[in-house]
Image (cartoon, rainbow, N blue to C red; front, side, top):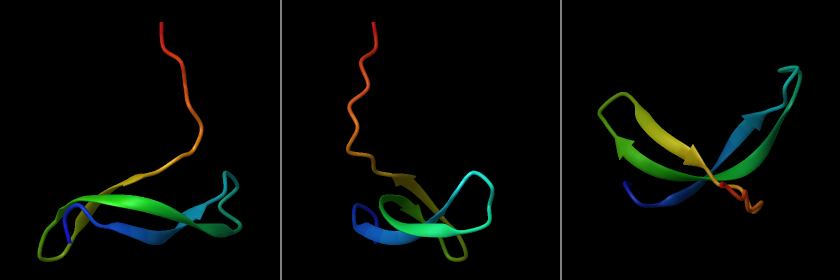
Length: 46
């Protein structure tokens, strides 16, 4: 599963609802996983 893009529910700030968003699977263990949510916004760092 590592390296795959999956759809996961991403909660809103108030935790009252969630929306499906893409995430990259960085690590998958036997009972857990580490993912990084993907954004289309480009942030400039200086």
